[in-house]
Image (tube, rainbow, N blue to C red; front, side):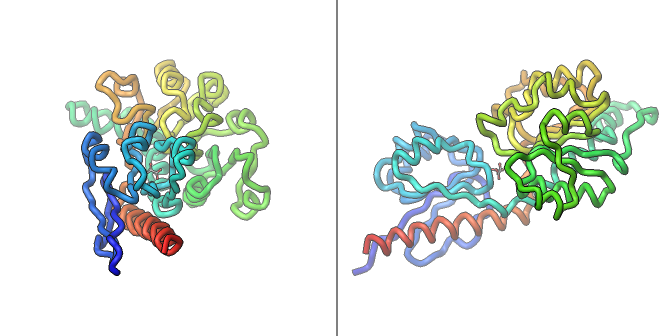
Length: 313
Ligand code: MLT
């Protein structure tokens, strides 16, 4: 007898590719309203999200018993209440590699934009001020500090070396051999890293350990006129501490792609901060990455459901 189709709901913006897969019904609506997601969820075996949708207790409870799998179209799973999801027996999958290059390229873009005053020059020129007095910073022969030498941090290191930056990284979870292979110097402690670098970029997941990891004390250890980039997760660099360090002139500039609360309110402290370049969590947003993310997460989720079907058969 024909089995009923397994149903998959994709509720965040992505490129899900071909939605026709035998035995499955995949419904895609990027940017689905949360209330509607909650209402429709009980009819699905799997849900695929990006970072926009908070997969919290409320959502998991709304799902009911049919839901088996949650797919995260991207790397970070900090939008998912993992403890509660596992308590409910849900399988959580992500797409750990598809958008790494795009995320790394955005971080490098922020570093270059900060060093050359892109946002201020853009703003000034539009406002009728032709400011050619501004002097930026050259990257060559400076030292870039990377916190987190995982997939994305490693790509940033490679691109930075291409720009003739010297790279030092801090990552207690990565073996010495990886540093050697990548030609990167290892900092034994975060403090050691901060004291040595001209520029700093963070590429860790958001966890209890990394939340607020770069606060006022850490920023103070950086050389005067350092640049800080956060294209990882809001809050790894404490937001107020970053604004204070920009306001005081300790930092030359900074670039952020992420906020603690997204989207930020109109009153967010970043919006008035000097020498701060902002993007709207666009690290993974390239055509190429979204094509890969969609294909990877859909196929992982369908495989998981398939396994579930054969187990049940
Ligand atoms: C990620 O963790 O891969 C990104 O946050 C993906 C996204 O933009 O949703």
